[in-house]
Length: 288
Image (cartoon, rainbow, N blue to C red; front, top):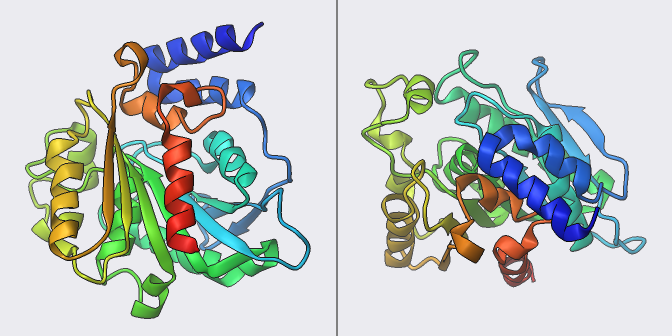
């Protein structure tokens, strides 16, 4: 099957079935070149981190660490669904860590943020074993995972000041950061709506101490409106004097959507949007 036919199959599955298509995407994407290592940060089977050592690391050198938090409305997802992202960032020369975190109904807010913070602490403790520079960490995430990443980077309740200083930047894809009142049933369950505190929203915690951010969105996203969320966050970051770049993608024939945006981080679907190119430029800028 040709590359274009594979892309058509994967894209069609994405548009029809959302997250279930990740198996297809991993099957047709390149696999990580180096075997991954699983470490635990808690007793739950959901409290695990998958480490993917960089494939292009010269002996004795250390490289930036990319931490990717996946989406799924805080009720679904698995670290092993995103091997294609590990391969993409490995190929760019980075160590990649992909955490699991507990989901609803096992936990509700702030349980999944607390797990994300605990996972990051494990990454800080262990990344040097795999060639990672724990002073140069870039958080990334899609949808609910972008919420987790941006919460860690902006809200001082979850990490110490010393831990947050290690975060050089954040890449948020379809980032829900300003979603009160909550409309989505899954998010209502995750945030105990209507008893959701205003300070659960990352935009409330933006300050001059926030790290630089790259905010990537689909132009047509009925789940996470880019104007209400990413654009509002960008305005607050700029007002605080923090570097931010926002990109809104439409893609060929308008095919970039909430789901296909993260899929464009695969080598097989990179034609949808320049997410890899923009991510690479941002990472190089903040970790130099």
